[in-house]
Image (cartoon, rainbow, N blue to C red; front, side):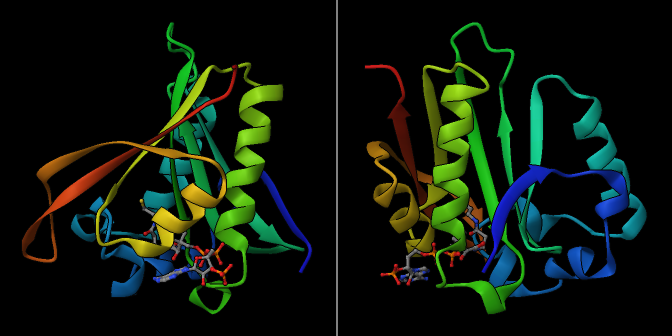
Length: 167
Ligand SMILES: CC(C)(COP(=O)(O)OP(=O)(O)OC[C@H]1O[C@@H](n2cnc3c(N)ncnc32)[C@H](O)[C@@H]1OP(=O)(O)O)[C@@H](O)C(=O)NCCC(=O)NCCS
């Protein structure tokens, strides 16, 4: 694999990207289960991210193939903290280290490019894969919000993870 992150541009939007979200496995632990995805909608979304100074949306690429996204938001925060959300949409890439790579790369950018003090992420307690990739990158569990999310017809707990970048 030849993995890299780069800022996603509207012209990167493809039908495979839109189709990631037809897969229940991909949306079962996120608010994407409540959204409708179309080519035009994703094009607008990517364009809006590009024009929003508070948010950077990175595509995760294997060579030229777009396999996932990682978003960092809150870049203008006076607290110098930002939230990350991520998806590896091409499920044939799951379990191959792509998620782990995306998080370690965003940590590097958070320090070197954005000069942040902290990154944080919230996830459903049942999202084992997400939990593993955060912990392997040094994120620590800061708290648990009980029955905080409603996914797949059930209320579930949210885990809040954080990583302090400047010691
Ligand atoms: C969560 C997600 C990003 C993980 O991406 P990934 O590329 O599969 O992650 P990695 O391959 O880097 O996984 C790292 C480790 O976690 C393990 N892992 C991943 N998913 C797992 C799961 N569901 N159960 C148990 N272990 C899991 C992998 O086997 C790997 O362990 P290894 O290094 O010992 O083999 C991906 O499954 C995904 O996009 N899910 C849907 C969207 C989502 O949930 N986003 C997060 C919202 S908070």
